[in-house]
Length: 363
Image (cartoon, rainbow, N blue to C red):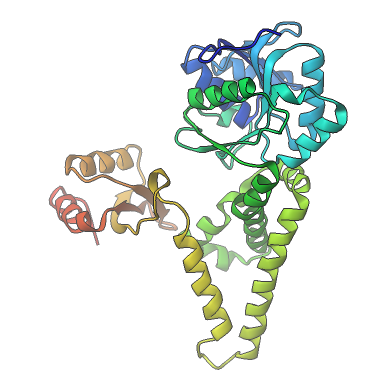
């Protein structure tokens, strides 16, 4: 086997043309890497090709690197099949669970020296190649979980892949990775689904009163149930442990509220939970991975018309103020909404004044 030299990834085969696989392919095509596409669904490959993600792979051809973009429980079998056919010199995967594929690969007798388990911490609520974006991984952490058998050459190769896609490689143990994603991704998805499930039985009155808060809490619950069932079952124990702690907190809050019903007074157990929630939110890294910042919000009323948001962003840019984040909230039954512009606190008053002077309605 001829080792890859640093900086020489010229061809990559992507197996699995869903959201992540096709996004990897699109990112590599922008860097002039030759990409071959494979998927058990011919229609998915066809769509990915039409999007410019690469060309269909012909088994027997050898690439510098193979990216396995299939559900966690199928990674090891796919790795073994690719290695038996000499599909690439090095291999990685992008599954959101790491311990399961590694243990299964060991059991199947895969060549672990050439395999670097990986997981880009990026995604969207939508799935499939149509949702793919070349910039999906820009600035995002990309976990690499090499085993004791993984060669330094394979690690360098996959680190190069991450750099080509614009991600930030982070080396972490597979078991530690799984415990981490249980807290930051997998259990939150189940929790969001539990809240969203209440909406399935909610009255039309309740739904008509819904605002941005419930959308924020339930947004990720729109993910593909079949895909997420595979992810959760692959990381079952760590996720179950987090969910049990969340359930205990919620059960304690419910008991306290029932015990103080009708009193209208503060409930210490609930206050404690809310306070811990504020502390936890404050620990989420901020922009560029730095400390979390508290931004000021400038709310602007905008019409629900094509180009209106772009016009607002342009106006804000002309004031010289950097917009850190934007959120939109539509007014039910009205052809308008509110754009919330998140800016540095010291810039908020000046931005509001400038926008009013330009004819925008700033409450």
